[in-house]
Image (spheres, rainbow, N blue to C red):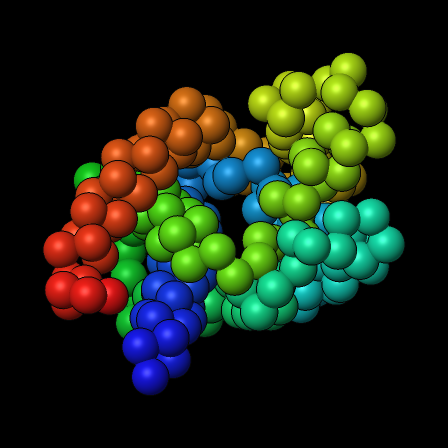
Length: 220
């Protein structure tokens, strides 16, 4: 019984984290200050192909999932599948809701607010997702794959930087070919995400774990 309750809490924490990550991508997109590295590539390519962001992200995640399956299969879990399907479509829906359905006029104060919210949603979502420990997204597995096949010659941190730089370059190239503004996909938001995401994830993770410990009943 206790095990079932614990698993249910983990599942809800995972869903919450993925919802927040989708909200993060939507906030960054509406800010117009640039998005995180993986979203940068996906927005650039989807814009070039004239395909919805969510659909392209699902396709590229499916390709990456195959690579992960044959390399570091232990990283795959329920959270992997939910992440690859839901994040892109959540972001698409929220952007459509606020910009098209509601007709929100995104002024400079709102752009700044969306930038702040995007940064907070990103770190809080990742913290929830990591604590749930139900699998990681296909893109987050890329750095682990690089580290594994480099046989210890490349650190995880450097591998992550490498993968982020590569996907940003791809996003910019496709954005230029589509004659779209590159500043909407790479800019201040990209830098803020890269610099603050790690420290804020740690901040939120420590507090969520403390809160969960306090909620445990004696004898659990």
